[in-house]
Image (tube, rainbow, N blue to C red):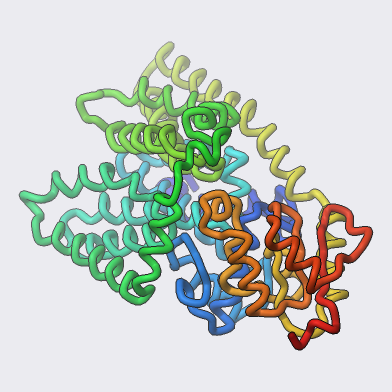
Length: 472
């Protein structure tokens, strides 16, 4: 049994993550994990229905996950559970890749410690079943790094590594933070394995360039403009990385504790076994500290390398206990027990908190909002809403230009009330529903003329088109 855990541990660790998250609660039935879920589901549904990304559909994110989710919709229809199952597969791939990376350098004990630390985080548990693009991008980057470190000069794995990294960037561009981590082994391999390094570059350029060409010129404009359109620090004064990064990390202190311990115990230091995870963690932390807005899901970029460093601590104690005698072995065993106790002390409450979220019944306001859209959904299939998940559950579509009705897009001035009015005028939706974002004076004035407000809506401003204006 020990041999299987050592040699094939990644094939056990990945399913264990899926089982662990499943046991925490019925994640497939949660109404919405995050507002981004509705946006991602609606974009994919529109693509599956034949609308073009970056053409009909405005989107400020790369295309890979949208296309994959569109394929899920082709196979399973409107299924939030199927979409979340796809994300869970990415989470399993991330654990699989991290296990192999750590085992290659520090053995199976270190690998098991690393994935245990990673799985203990409440954020990782929720992101593992949330239809969001951050975790899939990080998972692809981890797989790219695993193939790179395991290539041993072989061109095939190097080419695959480059292609995987290109897919990661085309899922969410924030994994560009890993560039220094990838450059270290590439530069080290350049003299002795130049053809293999060129194969890595070829795989990267072919996939990244090919997807960019398929997406078209609007892809670059929609991806870049939201980050340059305005001073984000003034638009999100309370969401600056300098204010949020440390508090967010302190919510999961086991990562900081295990990461720091890994740096201390990763000896002999001359082997620099901590170089890549430390470089990754420091680069990601520095980038996020200066980034605005900083959302909680973005710190996954820091959690993965901290878990890797935590694995070094477990590996060091396992080696010390295995080769020592007498009191030295006792110290190593006691240290391992202390690590396990710390993991339970910090990880247990976080797992309980995740379970509470995943088992929470749907908010009555959410259920009522979806039911109202179904009740008044006669006529066109369109509904304008700042909560696309409501339309998704109600069997309706959001006009493609408004699939991404996000706070960031509105505050950056990339979606004005007048533009919303133009979309309403063009698509003539039967309903307009607001639950998150201030609609603006222009929208309010247009709705007052062409729609009537449904009374007694708790937490929902719902407007239905006047019958006499249906043909205007």
